[in-house]
Image: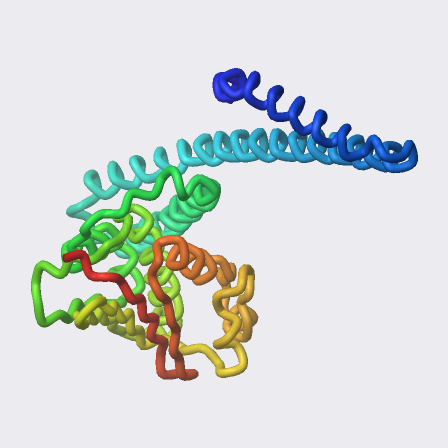
Length: 288
């Protein structure tokens, strides 16, 4: 930041001097006009100083908050390693209550880990433009990787993923990392509200290739969204009727998904029927 400031320091001074010269020519007419110009100039200077201070405070806040998240990830990782050791040492035991207890700890620890990762990605979203790398991504392979990455979430909640596609090697134009993060938010929501019913459920990933685009439909068999809430689900922190009924609703997941879809130049739509499930459709451009 300092290097950039020094690089353009002389240029900025010259621009400011030129502006002052031109403004002096304009305001030579009356002293009253010069007086008002000085007021405006001082006001602008104060505003720039305040803006600079605010930006510095925001950068500091993001830095310290990011460090806090990284520090919190350490005990979460230790718990995860301890659980892995426990599972390997007690693999042959038939103590079901103990096994269930360990599984429940793992599930809650995974929630902590996912929450911390979500916070980090939210902090990084301000630098999306610098971090954005569009490329040709194989959508089927990318989905398989993501499903495998989240397999414990599916298994624990008795939700079974199914990928349906008529063609292989379907390439879409996106950023692989940010697209994965966007899809994770939708999957987390789909699993959460499917598991509420307490029975085996499916989530279908239906890929439809069109002439100039690809539609990915994520179809769950969950509790659905009431008609009165459907138009507000992409608003930040909106939880609606389901948020009042069920725990762990944050109103962040779909908001982040819509924000990322917009930044990635994808289209996102949602359809739902109460007690029947929800379909989220993402439209990608095809990479030729």
